[in-house]
Image 1: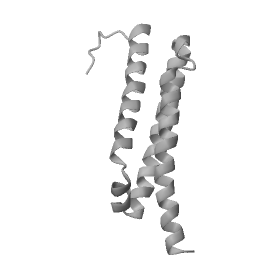
Image 2: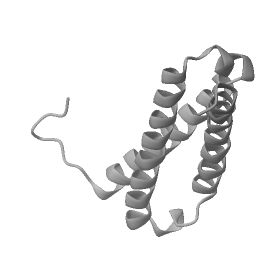
Image 3: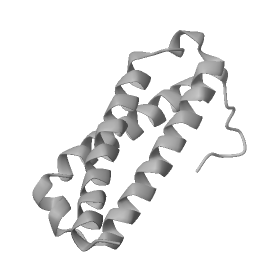
Length: 109
């Protein structure tokens, strides 16, 4: 916990935001590896719904954090990490959504 004498500098803020977006990206990579077809098939419908909600929140947090980083460090605008994250999250959400829809068609309306 920071003491009262801690001064947040511009560099500290930029470093923090860079670490945060990298951490969110790494967690998304880990999630992708955990979501094999076998693992998805074993999840309940509720677990799939919660997983999708979690992915949406992760995407929102990454976007918000990266936007803040871009405001402080213009070199981060259009960064490769942002592009990689967006592609990764699209792939992960597509896999989860495919499983959700597959179950919906199997059970019917």
